[in-house]
Length: 243
Image: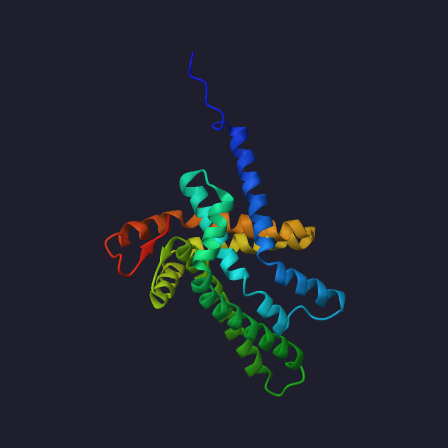
């Protein structure tokens, strides 16, 4: 008779682990974004728009939390097991200031773009410069697509490797273009999961959305990250790998 599998090797146990990790990731992501949740509820209760300078500032901790999600999901994909709580908060703490730099730029550009698009939409019909406004809107949307496509690679990469800032952005943009099929698949996951969350309208699914999205993106990009780690092993003065 064949040797029995040890406890922890079974399919059901593995499935349970993944469910538990995703739920735990959702809880920790919500916990580290408690400021935004508080501001969102207060603003929503008062009938105000959630898109304002206060909510943008409250969103700043979401960047380090997102990279912490990418970090633990990458470890799950790579090692198939993880000390989840320890790994999440270590990644959150270790990467906080570095990620905050990228995230502030990311959120800042998207917020300005969103405000400009809202302005264009509300004024384009009554403007004698409608053609210019519509052209500006498409340019802003193109900038947003490029920015988010770059972020698909930037945040997973910096969750695993320490690059100089300009190098990290260059590498992310390079792969966003070179691996266009992966970039398109990441967009498919983003839009598809967002559609599901919007239709379900449940708070737990909102945070579960980020956990599942990070896992899917990391799964798509695991060979890229592995290749970068291998290439960078001889250049420790420029880049450091994170276990």
